[in-house]
Amino acid sequence: MSPLPGFPCDPDLSARSADEAARIGWPPPVRRVVPVNAVIAPVSADDAVVLALDATRQGITCLKIKVGVGDDLGRVAAVRNAVGPGVKIRVDANGVWDLDTARRRLEALARYDVELAEQPVASLEDLARLRRLVDIPLAADEAVRDLDDARRLVRLEAADALVVKVQPLGGVRAAMAVVETVGLPVVVTSMLETSVGLAAGLALAAALPDLPFACGLATAALLAADVTAEPLVPRGGMLGVRPVVPDVALLERYSV
Image (cartoon, rainbow, N blue to C red; front, side):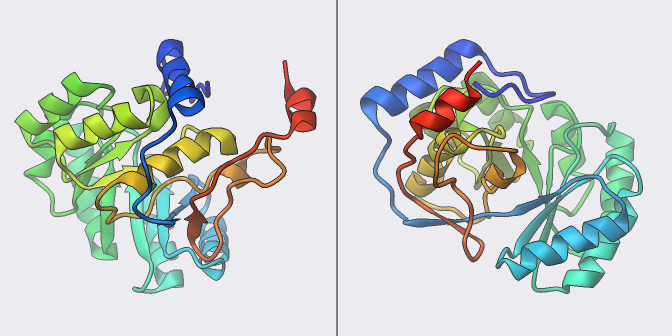
């Protein structure tokens, strides 16, 4: 279980996800590698450029920039100028904007060729209204927690894509049911798990029929430590689909 600030996870759903991994196994993959994006936190424009260039040198061709805090317009502009047109830029506001602010900010950001705006407003209703006001494609994330939310998103035509986290949905198959209900392109992302949890997200991304977007699964390096000797870290902008074996000594070191 990986409690993420602002995105609480039901312990029963975490347990269901773990049970699926341990006893049932995951659906067979249809791809052996999954493209991933890098995440740029709400830092200064200069620091954002350093992080962006470092990511692109590692072969990552999609950058997700956190917005809604500080000079987000300056941050996005600086990164776009630094990386050029060949790198995709995505923004994520985590639902902090109201409808009018989101409209104004996304209109200003549109000049920087933004691929996708993740959860710019909090509710599905506002997301649906915003989608009719701006040109940047919108993705729902925090607003979809279960199948009922997925059905409401479809009814409202609230988004162009869906961000999916395996753990809070109760496993890979439960996440696939949400994806099938929504019928939209998907970005699979993490709850900042160790590589054990990331393997579940990777299994979902590997099993989806289509995967048009880079996934937010390159987060193992953000942790101070992991519980496997071979963490799931990208090579050339890709994560290889493979089993993750926990290391007993590391489990003991970091157990509570």
